[in-house]
Image (cartoon, rainbow, N blue to C red; front, side):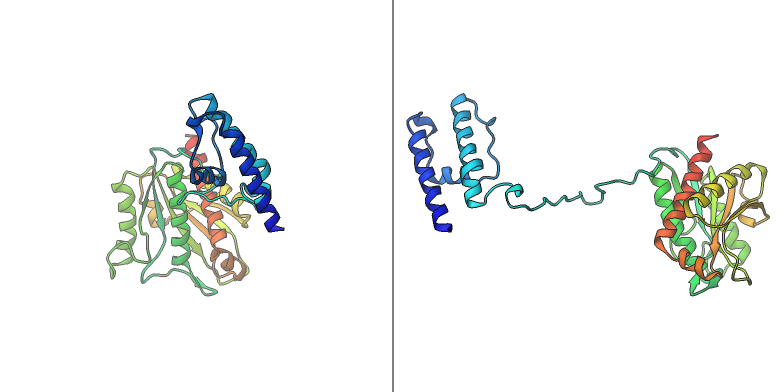
Amino acid sequence: MTSNKIMIAVLVLMLSFNFLLPLTVSYAAPLDNLAQTLTASTVSSSSSGSSGGGLINTIFSFLFDKILGPLLHLGSSSTTGSVPTTISPSGSSANPPSNVDSGGLKGKVIVVDPGHGGSNPGAVGNNVRESDINLAVALKLQDQLTQAGAKVIMTRSSDHTVAPEGSTLGQELAARVEQAESNHADLFISLHSNENSDNSIQGAMTFYNSAQSSPVALIVQNALISATGANDKGTSQANFYVIRSTSMPSILVEMGFVSNGQEAVKLNSSDYQNKIALGIRKGIVQYFSQK
């Protein structure tokens, strides 16, 4: 079967060569060029500057696409039944996420404070450490806020204390506040995970201290619940140092309870952490759009 196809192909080439040769000497090509033309995956008829070249290219295209291609199984993937592979450029996505508010926070300075860290892991339950969860969500939130146009200041970006190791708790908290004040932040948001002796309690809540922070606390809380489906434990005024001592609108988000087995599993999940970051980011964008 293969030998028959080759014989037919040779006959077609001979006939086409005898047909094309009388047209004009200037378009005659060596056999190696002819073979190269016939085995090219595409032939452009627009590259020639004359009608004669276009005619010859058209004839070659016909011979290759309609006769030689099907005989020798050359050409496009449609003749073999394969599906072309789509390759996305490095560092980008073929389908970029539509949930990023590009430029929605342009010019805003936001301090993201992952609670605890280093020698202070915070709440620990069900083999989950609060400091690890806080940092994981904070890094995801940093990325989303940056994509939305904000300048993001992280009080910490790894598992360490903000003040020098060995500092008092007061010095540690003051170091976090100082980052917000020295960078003239438009918003300060501290991320925490909760615990309770009653391990059936679960849900997310958002705290604020001053009246100027109440609106952003409510908006972020609602967006967080919408994104995660967590039990809504609402917003509440509190006297936590980091939200009491900052001059800009400031909130403290308790993302869930590590003491609850089911919620601890979710908090430790990258997908759920993305949902938390998404909800907080949406709330922040909404807050600034209403100002």
